[in-house]
Figure 1 (cartoon, rainbow, N blue to C red):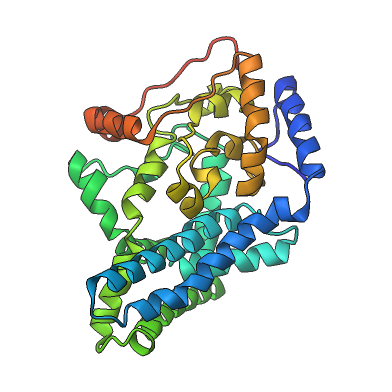
Figure 2: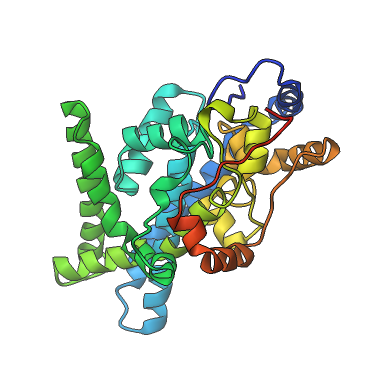
Length: 340
């Protein structure tokens, strides 16, 4: 597998080149199963439990109903978050065609967002300009007009409703064929959910089916928002003309959360406990990020490079205590003297 960053490596960045060489040796000696198969197995498993989730919703008892919601919410999150993220980085296949196809399927049909704009904003901006103010500074996740507890614990529940609305606004300036495809695929995804709820789960009205779909789609929305703000906001921020070399940019601007079985496998290792590795080598799959994690962390420690890690609860307390500073006020620039 060819490793690549989201932008060319600066000349003279010998440490990034050395680390890349170490990681390259691991990826070249890894099997297809390790590079892609493990993550595909998890995506297929998530899809395969969906019928059981729809069937459980036939019950009139609370326990089967709750289990059905849990299965459907988890399956939806695995596919629409983990699958979409891997597809946006072309991490599901060596084929450009198949990666594009998976991106449309996972991002648009399953995730109700736009593959073109989503990939551009995430890969071309956020990854290429991680924590660079005005470009990849995660400001799209900020909503400063909401109080802290509303933003952190209530507003995320509206994500399933907000996502397709935002998508429709973002595609207006795209070519007509892409607009038509995006509207069609998002509509197809919503219709399929409602069809299964009506014809398999036995819901009696379209409205009740639609509301149930929103319910299980929102199941992981709160940690989803938390994860996206915890791992960049509050860390070092840079200006475009003074951002450090890539290895330092990611070391100071990215943070790993600890292993968490539920979030690891629902969102993917690259979004949870291997986020530093993911930003250094964004084309690696979740399983490969986990495999190279010891190499990256040991290399950082050997060369006295920061390797940011913090717990979920610690970050949550930080954002509650310093919400105004982190999510409302403009971020302050970080000057990394000697590593630019």
